[in-house]
Each structure stands twice: as C-alpha cells, then as structure tokens.
Length: 479
Image (cartoon, rainbow, N blue to C red; front, side, top):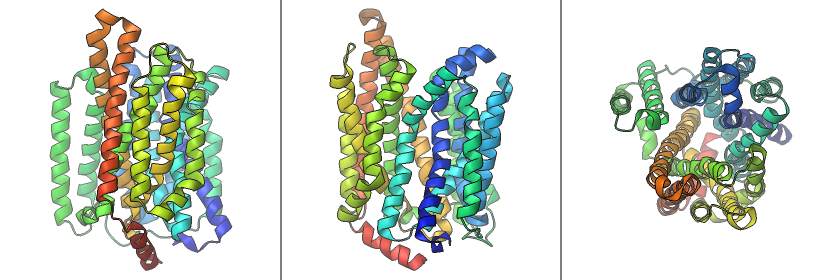
C-alpha cells in the first residue's frame, strides 16, 4: 500500500497525479478550438474532421474498464507510468503529424493511454489518503481537475493556436508528461497489484471493450449517420448483445473482470447512475454554452475561455477545501443533492439567455451557479463511487466510475445535440439562423437541467445516509 509515505510526499504525489490527469482531461477539449486550423493544414473534409475527436473518444471509452483491472492485477503505479508514457509519445506523434491518417491513429493511441491513466489515478489517490478528512480534501482536488479541466482546455487551445500553431496543443504535453513520469518515480513507491495472483479475465475484457467501443462509435456518429439508420441501430444492438454476453461470462468465471456483486453495494451503484446523469448535464453546460457564446453572441475562442473563468475559480474554491468540509459535516447526500440542484438552476438560467445577451446579465449568473454546483457535487459523487470497495477492486471501481462519466457524457452530448439540431431545423425558415440556433440551445439546456435535477433527487434519496461512517469502517479494514 502506498499510504505509508509521509504526509508531505502524499500531497506532492497528489499534485503530480492530478497534473497527469489534467493533461488527459485537457486533451479531450483543447483540440476543439484548433479543428479549423487542423482542417485547413491537413486537408480534412467536414466529415473526416470529426475523427480527430472521435478516434480519441473511441479508445478512451473502450479501454477504461480494462485499464482499471490491469492496475489491480499488475500495480496501479506501473500502469499509471505506462499510460503516461504512451500518452506522451502519442502526443509527440500528433504534434508532428503531417497527414490525416497519422494524426487520427496517434489520437487513438492517445485515447488508450488516457484511459489507462484515468482508470488507475483514482485508485492511487484512494490508497494514498486513507484518513476520511484527508481523503475528502484529496478527492476535492481531483474533482476540480476533472470538472474544470475541460473549460481550461478551451482557453489553452485558443491561446496556443493563436500564438503558435495547432501543433503545439499536442507538443505542450511532452514536457508535462516527462515531468509527471519523473516525479511519480520519485514520489510513489513501487508495489504489486492488490489483486496480484489472480488471472486476467480475457474473454470478459474482450467482450466489454468491443461493446464499449461499438457503443461509443454509434453514439458519436449518430447525428451524421442517422439515429434510425441501419449502421447506428446495428452497432447499438451488437454492443448490447456483447454486454449481455459479458455479464454472463462475469457470472461464471473464477476471477471476473468486473465482479457483479460490486453493484450490490448501494452507494457504488447509485453513484454510477448519478455519474451518468451528471456527465450528461456537464456536457450540456460545457459544449452547448460554448456554442451559444461563439455562434450566437459572436465570442472569439479566447473570449469563450475567459467566460468560463468565473466558474473555474468558484469550482477551485469549493473543490480545494470547502467541499471536503461540507462532506465531513453533512455526509454525502446533502452536498450532492444541493450541488446538482444548483447546477440544474444554472442550466435553467442559460435556457432563457437571449440572442443579444450580455455577459453580466445572461452568462455570469448561469456560470456562477454551475461553478458552485460542480464544486460542491463532484467530491461526494467520487467518494460515493469508491466507498465500500475493497483495495483489490479499487482500480476496477475507478474504471467503472470513469466509464459512467464518459458514457454519460457521450450519450448526453448526442441527445442534446440532436434535440438542439431538431429545434433549430424546425425554426430556421421562420426565425432566421441565429434565433433558431438559440432556440435549439435553449431546449438542450433545459434537457440538461432535467438530467441534473433527476441526478440530484436520485442521489439525495438513495445514497446511504451513514456513508461517512461506513467509509471510515472500510478504510480501517483496508489498513
């Protein structure tokens, strides 16, 4: 166990782990601002350009569960270092890419490395911090990185693309990746996996990985191919069939990739359902509000990034201290419910933003409420998802919650984009392009607000009221 190192080293190690995670989170959004420049330089068509994003999402979503289980078997530190190495090398290939094929393939490798890092980082943090108060603070830092990293990526992407070139949104990862690798070697003691000696469930790994990849592929291409097209329906049916086969394998195999008994733990099951709904709401905030700012209000990429700054600062304030105190004082349920309801209110504010909206009156209130909501809610969601889990399954639990967030975000974005596009198409002839776009975004924001409100009610009513006491007992047993 890594939690025997001294307190100063633990917090330094947390900073390094979060820097590695931030690199992964940034890369999921930093590329969006640079897409026009990439298309112009490498000759991407409008259709093929989406693969710069989709190739990353496909492998990232597909390998999260496998990455978490490999960490349990062979050591979380070893897998984290391997993931960072793979991601950094792939970033170099992306930055040096001079053809479409090379860039898309390198992005796919980036996604695989990112999946491994994301799947095991939460386990490393849980094992570093076993005292409830310290763990809550550490999870707040991790939650801020996950929640705020995406909007920071927009600002960084605009800055690097404007000042240098699109190549640097990838090349900037090189010094960060090397530094993270070196500091992890120095700060994290080596150790065998907590599930060492068990065999890898190859059949389960193959079926769930292919199932997730098919599902992600169908979702991210749903708008283009058509949601009722043979391709989309066929892939979703195949993904469902493979998922059912995976569950059958897990019920029979001696060392399952995902012990089904894990979902009998109420907090784990509830937190993952909340994670799916919360991620869908977060994508409504981040992506749809960025589109509103750019396409309706006419903001430039740098202005969009700056518009998210108040929310990031508020998230930092809560995630880096206040959220942990709320969890220690009130447990998991109340902060989770309040945070998600605040997020729902923030999305509702955006759902009334006019075509000629101003930042102070129409953008800042929603950003403020969403920053508060994310800062308060992220910590209890992550703590609940990892509660009651044995150390030998912490990597798996980490992979599951990351998969829940990723799939919730992907499905949510697809649904929201479809809802917005349908409303826009219906009104464009009568209202004009900008007004129709704004009306479509309003409906997407309202849908996201419903997701957040349902997540709030679900989590606040079904999470165990005495979760903190049970967490403490689980931690005492694990030491």
